[in-house]
Length: 253
Length: 242
Image (cartoon, rainbow over all chains, first blue to last red; front, side, top):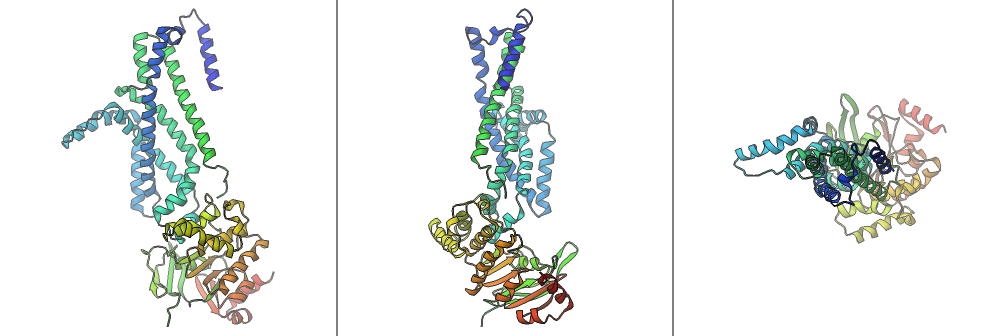
């Protein structure tokens, strides 16, 4: 439906003016040049997906590791959690990307380590770390929302901390935090566009490059937006399916 | 000569500045059934929670089978606990609720654990509910599953923290019946409850608490018919009125 509206809007645009405002030919798959352009634009899709999935996977793992000390009874552990979350989430993505890509290798070199950070891994690391502060807060809220009696009951049947988390708390918490986690994933997909500024060949970078040769920013960036829209809609459908599968039928705890 | 199952000597417990338990002395022999009653906020639940280390105490000694319990020690899986709110795991089936502890904490195989689980479900008289989720059971059934879940760990001692207080009146007796049966089988039990009929029937020792202290304790006969303290008399007259 949303797709259709956008499509209609584009059609309306194409009708206005003398064809100078909107030129279908740039991205018309029926013409040889248009098809080449479209293929070029879409060819960044794989990189965007791989980048987002990797960053999200790392972010969700790191986020959980950061969230757990935040739930401790000990003040020192909670402080570790607070410092990480407050520090990381106050750094804007773009400066962090520059820091990781241009700055981190210098630190590595000063330790005698020759670890080159290419655009792809620079982007993965930045997106993952930046996002992990938010996933950590989501986990913390989700775990705290599980009644204390659940972990007490688990302890009285002899489960240790990790077993209690693994078999009792996290399965219940995950079901509740799936929607906000999905939000974060969508956020990562969109923020992955920043990777274009350090030269990573993903969707936005491809669009930028094509604009330079074709001089048709309106058509090309419009198609770019549609590409992200399709990606995000696919994710949304997948998450809905996952929510149903994970049993949203058990409402009461 | 056997050690008492529970020995509490001069136990103090604070929540911040507030002293919830003041010098609690309580001895529970093996096989003995102790019922603790008292007004809300008197610390009776806290006593039970200190016994199995859900709460720490700040002074005094707690011994289980002669062994002093410490804060660093793990929560004891040989002490069963039944909660007011059941605390069943809602994402697991009844059978999975029962087998989780035996498999993960005792190292039983799934098959052994299931045999054990079905035995205790039989005992609490709901073998047919094994594959349901807790939310599909009535409150009384859920509490009986919770009792069975504790029994699956084959504890030496069972603690009950107001097990019938969250139940609709018509479901109370089915839970009390199961508990009475358990008592007759010789289980050592500490029960926090206001069910005085149950107390009269199964208790060996009655304990009355108020404001963090044990005000009075004794046999049910002495306790119900001739309470020594004024506070206890008042409490009994209030809860036995209806």
